[in-house]
Image (cartoon, rainbow, N blue to C red; front, side):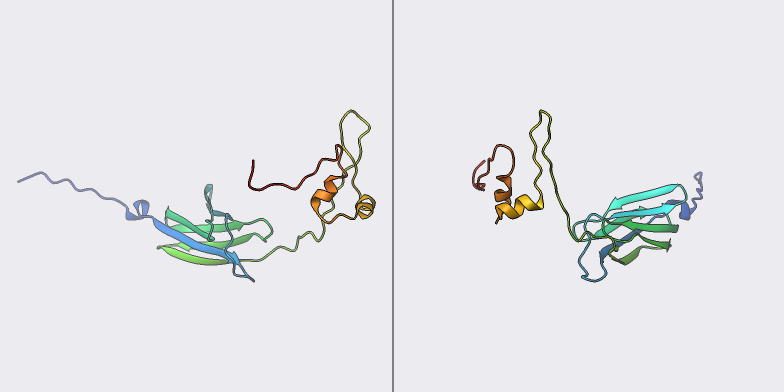
Length: 153
């Protein structure tokens, strides 16, 4: 007769589940690459970025109640309470935020100090009547502009 030892292990403390999903734009259905995905459980935070195809994956989390938070530049924050009891897959549609820029104006002004800078305003651009960005570079100190050669260093 041998000596037998019995071990008791609480399976809920050892077992883990996977949680994965895909993040896309609600209108275009395009995947959102590199969105920040967080699973929050009390003080515990699991955080990852979605892949190029919008897919995210938490391969090993403990079962329980979590808050799923997804953020992406130019989109409203997504939050949802999720209960993970078994392996779960989720599709998330992100809504673009109302904050967008219609026009960006870049200006520079001539400095009176020892540095070399100039102000390029709309009047100067109208006077020059540029057809390309390199035409605008003619207004910069030194007047150096040339067409880049993409085949050379």
